[in-house]
Amino acid sequence: GNSVTQMEGPVTLSEEAFLTINCTYTATGYPSLFWYVQYPGEGLQLLLKATKADDKGSNKGFEATYRKETTSFHLEKGSVQVSDSAVYFCALRDAGGTSYGKLTFGQGTILTVHP
Amino acid sequence: DAGVIQSPRHEVTEMGQEVTLRCKPISGHDYLFWYRQTMMRGLELLIYFNNNVPIDDSGMPEDRFSAKMPNASFSTLKIQPSEPRDSAVYFCASSFNFDYNEQFFGPGTRLTVL
Image (cartoon, rainbow over all chains, first blue to last red; front, side, top):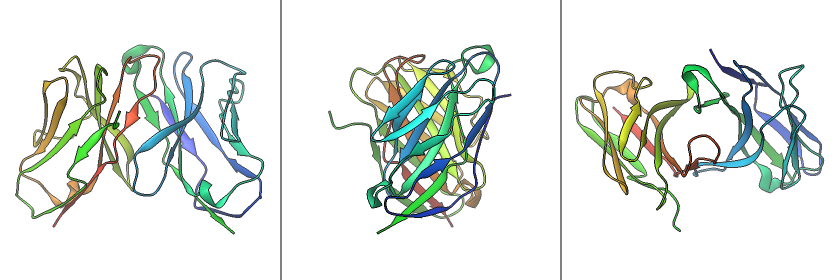
C-alpha cells in the first residue's frame, strides 16, 4: 500500500537558519505529492504541490522537488522565520488502484523557530 | 467564504456517551472528507462523500462510528457509544474536485473521552 515517511521531529532552529524536512514515499503508479502546514489551533493548509517527476513546488519561500528516482519530496527553505513554526505534513495522492485520489499523510514534523 | 466550519471546537464527554461532530463544507464543493488525527496513528481518512453520497467508508474504525450528509451544506460524524481510545482531533475537509483540486480543512474538533 501507499505510505509516506517523514523525518522525526521536533525540529528546532534559529531564525534565518536553513530548513530541510525529509520526506520519502512508497506508492503504486505516479502519485502527486504535497506539503501541508498546520499552524497551532488550525486545520491543515496546502503549502505546495508537485504532480509529476522533476516538478518543483514552491510557495512562501518553501520549495520541494519531486524526485522519482529516490522517491523523495524534501521540503526546504533558505531562511526560516518565527512565523514558520508549525507542523508540516508530507502527503501523496495516488493516481490509480484502489486508493485512487485519496490522500496519504506522513506523521508530521513539528518545527519550532526561535528568534 | 468562511471556509470549512466545524463544531464544536472542543468536546469532553464520558465513556459510553453519544458524540456528534458537525461540519459545514465550503459552498460549491462536492466532496467532503472526515479525518482523524492522533499521535499514534497520525492523520487517517475515515470516510468521504461525493454529492452527499458516501463513497468510501473503509477507514471508519468500527460500527460505533457513523457519518451522514443529509444535504450539500452539512455533515455529521457520530460516535455511539464513545470510548477513551476515540480521543483525537477530528477534521472535516472539502474540495471541488476529487482528483485535481486541493482539500480545504476545517479547524478540527478536539474530542476527549474520559
